[in-house]
Length: 365
Image 1: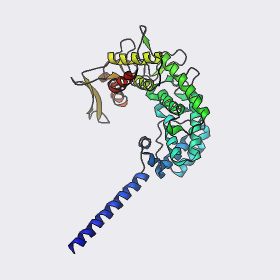
Image 2: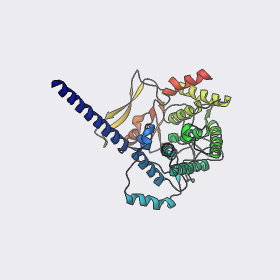
Image 3: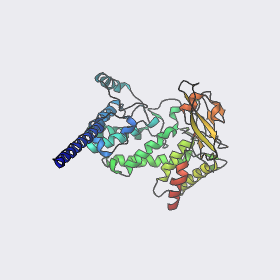
Image 4: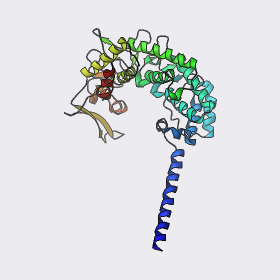
């Protein structure tokens, strides 16, 4: 009798465990997640109802010209009224952007959904978005932050926040027929290759020279003369540690790089080597004197580094810190707390580049 009871208990425990696992699986398939997380799920997830709900949002937010606005959580649940309003607004929205990950991230998401579901509406929206990116490119190879052109610093060739490199990464995946993009037609593959070829030309042309020596890049460059350009008050013409790291990482992935590309990479890496900040550490601290109760500071630390400035003086390579007053300072403590916590002025941007990625590339070149 005891043996049967044990078997019964084991069976019940197994059944309960199975039901809980099933419930968790169903929940995982249907839970609402953020837009950021939605872009990095296992392949199976993109067949879920939740994934397609978000994809339908992406279609609603797509502007008539094929692009998207920025800073929108595509995963938010929309009411019927909100969906209708988005449909009504489509014809009124003329502009779109590649800033803050806009457009190229939506397109990557749609490709995943199309590959999983095979629904033509996702493919159609994807191809429309690719056409937008190809049309937005300047004849010289650069991309503006907004297209159609929005006057002001938005016209600059924009590396800031990975804008242009994000677009080129996507177009390169299309050009080389990467698996997720094998559905793209030959004509668009060819145009994508032509676009990244022109993009490479402008990357090489905008690399800043100081005293005849190649260094790195500014976050944005003038669309006509390629000079380092100003954007917002705290984004002055300078050498950018963050954006330049992204550019070099892109160049490292090129097959059969030309001598000019090799020189570009090695010159940028040398600049990073020469201008790394050691013996300092960036830390977050609690500070009740501020509304959000925190602050970001830089402290002395013998084991700290390497760090690089988001913005660096073009001539000296020294990190600079600029608040909303547009005045250059040389320590993060000298700018307002709102900027210290709202913008990443100094970080270990090129650490993995120098430690892992560049040495691996150099082995092959």
